[in-house]
Length: 115
Image (cartoon, rainbow, N blue to C red; front, side):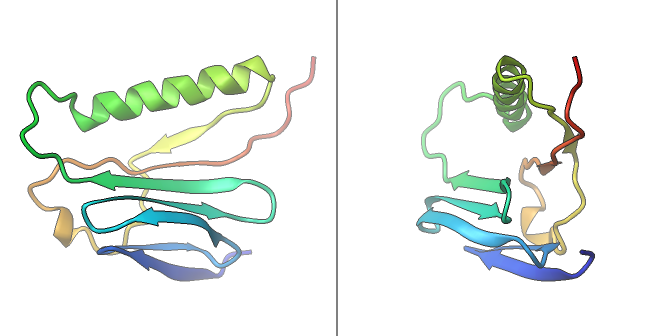
């Protein structure tokens, strides 16, 4: 299916496949989480928070590196395929991100491993 629709929440808008649905949403403009699912699997997770008075905070790319490494370990434990594309291009309008650090990644199931 190649049809796409807009998903928008708390100032973020992105184009997603039309078979993705909102699976969960929590929070508000300051801090929140949204998850998009299709009939098979979680397809996208979006988390945001405003940082106030932070000391030595990790850079966003370091946090994403850690998160993806953790997901990869979990996938290996159950012998599940794991693939992620960093710098995914599904955000339509990045103007609101100017001057901010951000990371956009996407993943998809790959063919099953054979042993």
